[in-house]
Image (cartoon, rainbow, N blue to C red; front, side):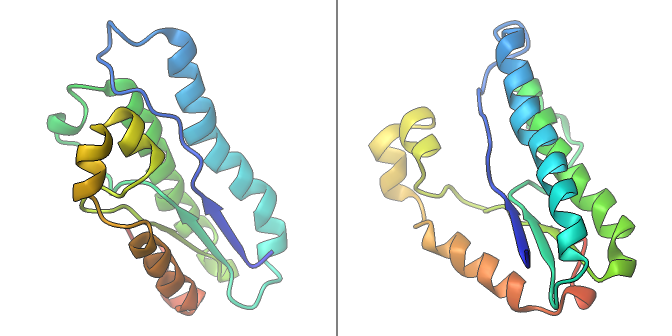
Length: 151
């Protein structure tokens, strides 16, 4: 294994009182626990790779209330992925494993956008997924020992 990409995610953009615990658990199981577990299982193999990378599709850590106020549970789950980037990048820097996050500054035309965030109207105004693929490729081409802990 040379590269690990943690892209799986569960989303429900609801307030605290509207978020049922099954959905809360699902978001945390997939987003935070999934990122931790998949990374953990890949790291022993990544240690022997020539240019090892872990890439989490997770936002930069920003503790402003505006990111939490409308969907606390989802933001907590996504920031859990971000904390994996922060902690693992420091923990495995000595092994030469780069751990970084990638997050778009605009909407990307994905199933989540089409089904949950505005449908075809928002999708039409969104960037192509190709921009994320190109950005990920650029990250993977960088020497892992020189580029870790970035958002």
